[in-house]
Length: 318
Image (cartoon, rainbow, N blue to C red):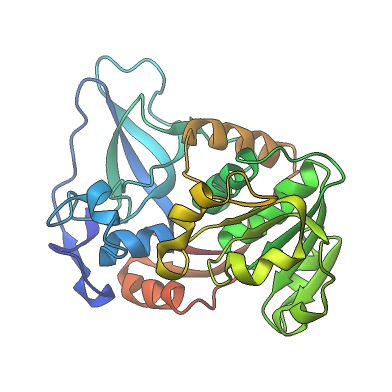
């Protein structure tokens, strides 16, 4: 099989496409032929090892797995003798933020891993694009006491997390203001946001407008957003923030009238089940920006690192 591999942390040019042996599933494992995966921000951290905390999850001092890749969608080709959950021919998708090695044509997974059946009307690309960003968006929302009618700002609404978050917030009945890069409001309008503003216009927002501000790209700060929050409002960012402040601000603001919460992600399986149901019922549609073949994985990583992508970048294995 072909796989994108590296031996240590570093930039995208560390990745090489090599022909390796196809893995053999153990008694409790399944062998999946990967048809699509994404290149996402989690993958970028797993490739570079930055911030350094990634290495505690992905391997230290060198990566635990040679291949990158945290999500996938594909078909089960073989199952171990103790596997009862899946059978050959099943279409499956999954995600693990500690890296699966799914930037390869085949991977093996335990039947107890975060793997679910793909709803029948969903393509491999759609399934792969509904994992990483949607899971993190769900974890933002789960960290709050969101109610129907709450006013929520999504900063960075064009990314994988942000575009998923806008749709999920509308599903829960929130009033959503989506903040995007200049020139991108048409993309966000299709997701159901109540208002779309471009980053250049952020200064016109009234103080005390929002119950929650969700920074899906990690490019704002609590200090900048605090005036826009109502009393009792909450700010959440997908990144650590200036000086890693989003790790300690939850402690120093926990009794304040405006708080910071850090969305440590949990329960991937529950996220996939929720998104799978929404996909099947046409209540969620992942945004796909570009597609790259496996052989162009370096270019895919550089594009994701540029911060210019809209939604998800797909890597195809066929």
